[in-house]
Image (tube, rainbow, N blue to C red; front, side, top):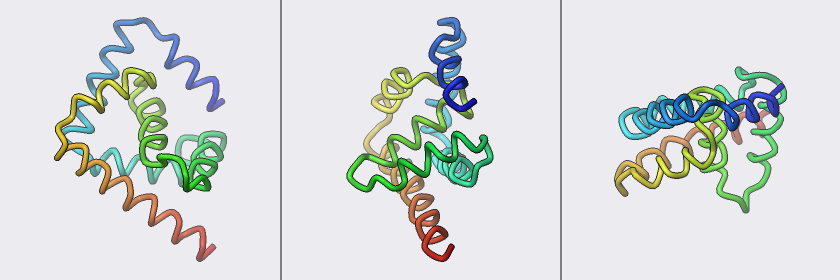
Length: 119
């Protein structure tokens, strides 16, 4: 189901994809804590078991840019923003906005890792 949702997001009509990307851009710019909270939801399985497994796989890959990958997933699952448009929106953020989003998402990643270790 998670993969089907991602495919639907990518194949949505262009107007819907643009609107979703604009909404996600606004969320990343104005509410990085909300985006990070949604990353936590993703890791907790609130978007479904399949999406949680995908997120846990990312969490278990410390050499990749986990915050970017998880933010892209949240963009797709919560805001229906396609990957390429999410990247373009992220690039429009100022350095300070990017740093705020990164700090918030990294805090969620650390929290999830701590929860995994405590099991």
